Structure formats: C-alpha cells, structure tokens
Length: 336
Image (cartoon, rainbow, N blue to C red):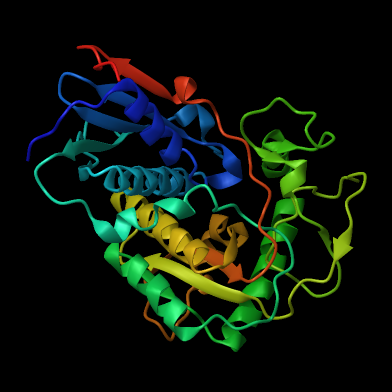
C-alpha cells in the first residue's frame, strides 16, 4: 500500500463530502486531521458535540462519524483513490475513530464511486411519503449495501411495523417527561423564521416538515409543541416502510460499521429514487431498543430504524465550513 499526499483543494473537497453525512440532531460530531507528511487523514470524535442525555453511551455519535467515513470513502473512490481504513487505531485515544490512507496502487471501488452523485442529494425528509411499495430489487440492493459494510438490513412485516409505531409513541411520551432531554433537543433546534438563523448545525425550521395529523407516525417533531408560523399539518402514511439496521455486537467498532452501512444504504436508496428519515426515538431507551428488534430476523443489535419511501425531498440542513472541522499537520500540502 502506497499512501500519497493530496493537494489542498482535493483535501477540502473530500472533507466537505464527508461532512454531508447525517448525524443525530445534525450535531456534526466529527473533526478531521490530515497528517500531510504521511498522507493519512484521521477522523476524530468531537466530544464537545456529544448529546449526553439523548445518546449517553456515544453510540449515535459513532454512527454519525461512521456515516461521514463512508462518504469520505465514496468521494475518494470517485476521485480515483483506494482508501485504506483502520478503525480505532489507537486504544489509548478513544476519540481517534479511524485513519484513512489514500492508496494509489489498487483500482478504486467502482460500486462506492457509483454512489458519489447521491451524496449531495441525500437529505432527511420529514414529509409524508406515498403508500407505493418499494420494489424488491431495490430492497435487495439496500440489503447488499448493508452487508458490504458488515451490517444487516431487515424489512419487518406489517405487524412489527405497527408495534414500532407504538414503541415510538412510548419513547416520545418518555421524552416529554424528561426536562434535560427536551432541553438538549431544543439546543439543536432552530425555530426562528426560515433563513433567519446563521447556525451551521442543528435542525433548521425549514427541515421540520409538516406537523402530523391523524395516526401515529415515526417522524420526530422537532417543533416539540412550539408554534411555527406558516407550518401546515399533514396526514402521514398509515403503515410506513421501515427498515432495521443492525449488527452482531454492540461496541464502538460495531457502531462505526453501522454508520458506514447506514450511509451506504441511504445513498443506495437515494440513487434509487427514495427518500428517508431516521427513527431514533426508541433507541435511546435500552428496554425499548431491545424490543425494536424483529425477532423473526435474528438481528442482535438494532443500530438504526429507517423510514423509507417515495415523497418530497427534504430541505438541506446546514453544514459547518471545512475550515472549522479540518486541521492540517505540516509537512505542507502540495498546491493545486
């Protein structure tokens, strides 16, 4: 394996693509450090952006950083590189989540490179989706995407989806009774008029979607009871298309693999014309997370619940500029 330095413009573009990944409450809990003398890009957890009440064990933080790592791999492959990844390379530093060397000797992964156009198009959609079924071949491609990253994707049956909707209601009731959790969510919620907030993180009001009317839905309402001028209401699908993403074990390396699998599934779904939103309400409560499993699948640990379907594309959420998330350690990066 021969790692090679990259120029400043390429490095900036790779990190910008990486940070287009989803994260819990769009907290963007990542930092990148480029060791230019070695040609190695390191991914660190930014623990200042952790959500200790919502995500006490850091599972969601790792999943978000894993999604950013997958985007980085896709962007590198599309640029003709072969990224070589080491997860958790330093046991003495748990914030160092991955090292990526850009190999110049092997052929790029064409399956990853083919997902590159979906990166800027993927946005969480909190709008109603149609009842149109997802074709079996697209479901198969999403399952294969998860499997390629060492995870499992399952589409549970209607009875379990209905149970999941009830579990989401249970989780939301618990959240409503937890002032610290509500305050943490409010911290990452931008409820001012559209376009008025200069924030480069969190969930903007434009991305809330309509308020729900009628049957239970797994879509999180970030308005949390606040009135949002001009926001309408809508009836959501009665039986949403739900996918469970899981792993065999439940440690930091598994969470990072789950994040990569999640983003690979989402990019595959986007390329196939689907939109998606995350259903994380039940996963913050251990007893609810356990029963979120589909017992017919043998899935050990649910890492994400994904709502998929055909519907309006979600509004983009803001991203921090690259110069806020990337440090370069000299020997200098070559000029473009």
